[in-house]
Picture (spheres, rainbow, N blue to C red):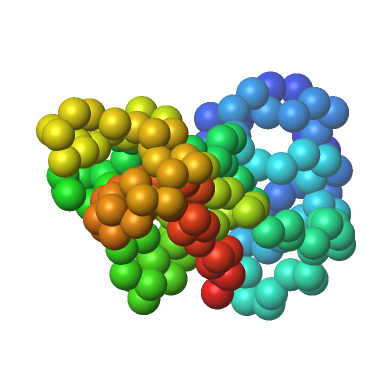
Length: 181
């Protein structure tokens, strides 16, 4: 027929009608059409297509700001007492400062720079770890502050690797800044 019927037929017709129906059908067709529509739909479809397009789409037109370098510095200059590299007991911030090649390598990592600012020389940090204690020759526990202003004490105790690395200011062992590569 060339004119739409008032109600659906029981059997599909062999060809489409010349005139579109006044209202859309209540359900979608079983299969998609073989050719695309002349104009795009007003809204995107709910699901992605099953295949990529044959031709790439144009580049995005949205301009974004240039990326910024991640900079997260320490909140304090004091090395974290609880920090352990890879959870190894003896790999604390002082361990990082014991050997210069090791310090240069490990201070490249953000987590080390943040946890061990005095060992890495971040932002000029040169602060004794205030909770650090060591034993003197009389087996008494002493702090880094005990070394201040006493050349003999500094000469005796600052040669100990751990004391020198934990009492960086008192032992005049401020570390140069490690440049991130």
